[in-house]
Image 1 (cartoon, rainbow, N blue to C red):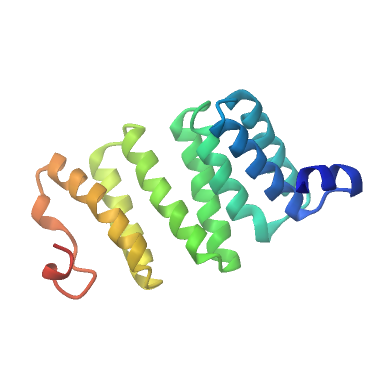
Image 2 (spheres, rainbow, N blue to C red; image 1 turned 90 degrees about the vertical axis):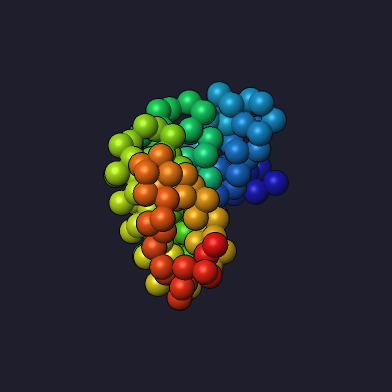
Length: 167
């Protein structure tokens, strides 16, 4: 309904959010090419309207659809921008989602594991500074995987008080 309303009455910052959700919905239904087109339109609209308050969500949701079409390295650039917008406007939950997506993309796009580890270290510090325990706990399994692949599984940082808190 929001997409139809925007087409009838004009575009606003929320229109980009409606378009991104519609594109994601279409992609979930299996129409990835059409969903991808809506995502690209939504991102361009948000940029044109300078919709700062919605940009984090638009880029976060959009990057999930774009990952089916574009290389993960280019998608990761959007995710990093999403994080920056989220922190700038105080959308901490979406910023932390962007952090998690950044780590996953870095891992699966084949970045060197030492770079992935460094990214996770920085991410865990950021998550800890915002007291986002749920995001920290969701990040630790992938972190342990990276450490195991490097050979340093005992190097999990003590960010929650003591090592026993995270094991």
